[in-house]
Image 1: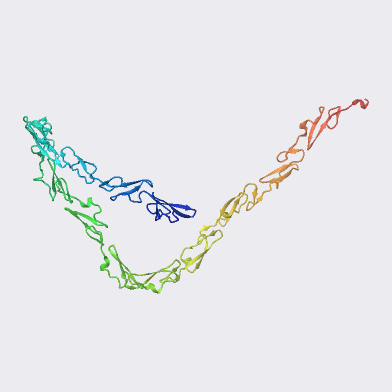
Image 2: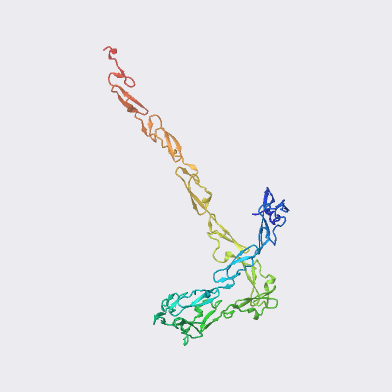
Length: 519
């Protein structure tokens, strides 16, 4: 998008200099590239060059090739380095296509064949030559710039050089057949529709034609055609054209087209006229709008635009709405027949002036849903809803689960006026906020210690017991602590060894020395 004016519009450069815009940041300047022979910022100062002394004469134009070399463009009739020499060929003195060659002070014409003389204006008489160009007794006839030969019957060709064959080439036209009757005699057998010595005439088939309804006969070859007027068709213009079918939109604006013999006519709908029902009838011409009213034409009707204070179809009635008889923001319309006010009341009001409040609570069925209590107000009513419902008519069931009252991933079930939490295993309470104590039933046996967890528990068993509930008494004899064939007896968190004879100790590991008893 251009934001700055161009310094080159218009160009400040003179004498054909070329202007170039130059940018310097946010500013613009110009530079002139001068034509050869001029200098300075605007190309106003001429250099000392070869054209300064106007060397070209007789209206010639000087063009610089360099500062010291020039060329003259000479006007017609002059030539030479400085257009000093007249050109004798400038006036085209050579006629009939002769070529002009300029000499020092005159010219020479090189004439084409058949013309001669200084300016090629004299016709050459080819027939006056010693040897006639026409052969075989042909007569030479001179013409301007040419000649032709009149041949005897037995010969033909440009110079009567070819023996005459009557049918080669055939002289018969329009497809006629040449029939040779003698050495120089022939007849033409013409196709139907042609006549004449050489079948050159097309027989006019229109005399006695059958074209009707002012149809024009057009001759053809061995036949004729009828050129019908616009409303007729057919071979002889005998068929009436159905303009209504040919022009579906001949009648406009809903008009009905009826075809007639040689024409059609339109039956217009009410409000339109004209040949094609395109003209809207001005119903205001006969309208009787009240004085001061403005009549607007419509299709087959009119509309009276009433001035302030008037109403009715013709603006003939006083406007009863001027006094604002309708109350409570109701809409006032005027009866177009009698001019009286018609009040359209807003909801909640009734009466001719909309001044009566409607008790919506006593109109029959309670407008408040789900047991809501109806309270009448001015122009409306109000519903007092039961717990769990909301809305202008208590029509909305409040979703108590929207506030996410249930904790610990519990599922909330919305109910009328309340909710229910379905707790995940391990939780209880109205809001599933209490972790259930699985140790309350003392599930751990044999003095095991119960540790509560979420939806589970863990038993820390006393020595000598194991299992999830400490219900398993550990068999201390399983490790065979008793030696030397002693019998191991398991007990709670202990075992006893019954030693075999000759052994003693806690594990019967001591061999009794019977010799110490001095048997």
